[in-house]
Image (cartoon, rainbow, N blue to C red; front, top):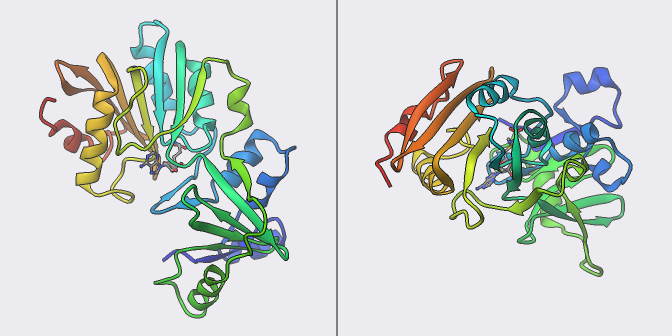
Length: 279
Ligand SMILES: C[S@@+](CC[C@H](N)C(=O)[O-])C[C@H]1O[C@@H](n2cnc3c(N)ncnc32)[C@H](O)[C@@H]1O
């Protein structure tokens, strides 16, 4: 069971943070002068619904290497879904040939209000998703948490700050992305909806389509949308880093996704993807 209240590592001595559930400091996002690594660490603290925004640079090097070997060096259109702050996209950008790169995620902004030293973070629908002070970080998942953390967390989420001014909007996209090229496009895109921009030669879905986050029915719905986002002959790459790096690369042929290459045995949803009838 996840602790709904964690120590903010920025405040407490390291030996204590090794003993008690702790997390990086999300408040660094309010500072304009942080490094790309610090930015990704702060974004990784957030959880929206069932999915964490956890990410880090160079997360799936074996997959990127295989994709560069499989590609014919033709500049391609790449769609990265559930990309979090895009730090993993920036690695792919450096290793593959591309002409247009879509960095997308359902949650690309948060809105912050401060009240008496406590910072409340809201999603785009004005739901409070995280509360932080310089000492603690509090998550919404208090229902099944242990006593008294459940009561304390619930108390925080039931007392919201006054809405006497506009909240501060924070874009959860790593500043490192914007320096890559003007052909990088950032969009809020939900994989349970149709992709309405240009079709892609390569779709990357890293650490988003797995059974910890979604049911099989949801995964199939998302795959159908991602398949429609591909050009004929394009590739869908699914990556899972929960233990070691595992991935499954599929190619679209005559409206069917066929298996092209696996890394470390492929992902747990490979057979589910292959079970999808032709579009
Ligand atoms: C664990 S992170 C993976 C980040 C990055 N791809 C990586 O491998 O490091 C999962 C991301 O999926 C996003 N996400 C969750 N549900 C989504 C949905 N329905 N559509 C698009 N993105 C979603 C979350 O906001 C989060 O940023």
